[in-house]
Length: 361
Image 1 (cartoon, rainbow, N blue to C red):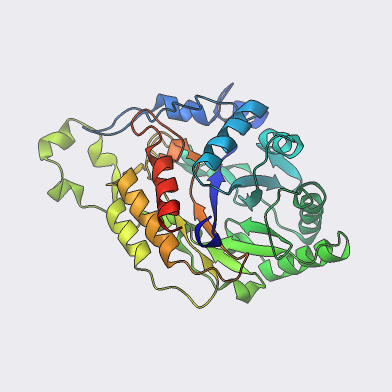
Image 2 (cartoon, rainbow, N blue to C red):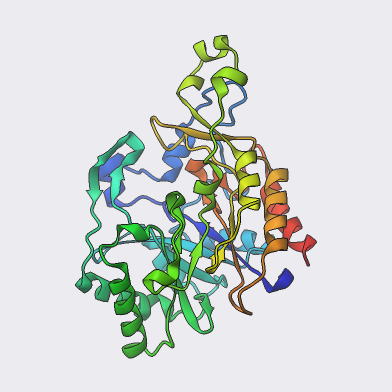
């Protein structure tokens, strides 16, 4: 890789049915259910966004996982960052993960990001309805890290920094005492499982910027989907006509300026702690939600290429192995945020990825 950089793509495992989703959303529900029901809400709106090369895969299938990984590797992606769902010992969306761990022919480095928020009916606009609650306790901290150390961190493909398994927390602000949790995790990993230590990170989800050292953590990760959609567009006044809004649902959409968001990310002043940068192909969650849609206008493969190229060019690894750049995401189809080939762009985002990485070689 150029500059000894490891490029990692986030992967969502929700492309297979589970009993809980059957109960909550209807029999046979998967992420594809949302994707395929999407409709354009205004003239020129790219919906539905449908897959081409990989098709409507089921990530329980070994071949589907291998095809996904092979495609990513062919365009310069070093590894995957899988979302991990743990609720006090109850795991969700676990079949693709467990299958991956047992799949010898899947030669793809990986790490986990714990999606540690409550599972709610947010998609229906009913976030107060909790479907699976996240309860924090010292006992759960112990059970969780023991499971990770025994079944996940020990995998030879698991990504490490200085021989320390890398583990990411999505929403660190939800912990009642994060520093205590971190201490428990480190102690068990070292004392019970013989790891030199853990390399623990938090994301800047929802724009929350925190010095990770304050909590005994190693680094932060820019959460580019949230970073890039901060800027709203005044669409009613300067983008569409009044007649346009009368004939469509455009007035109900929250438009964000994707291009301006990219510029802001590129011009960001870096903090004095370790921050790994991240880029995002695009954003449009109209297929996932029944209301409160956010569409980032102006995204395209060329802009994504420039964002990744400049991010790679400016990045100075903190050490030989602290050399990560994240792409968010590989397959967030229901958020219009995916590198995987689709009916409009084909492999253009993957080709832009490879071109940006090679241009900095």
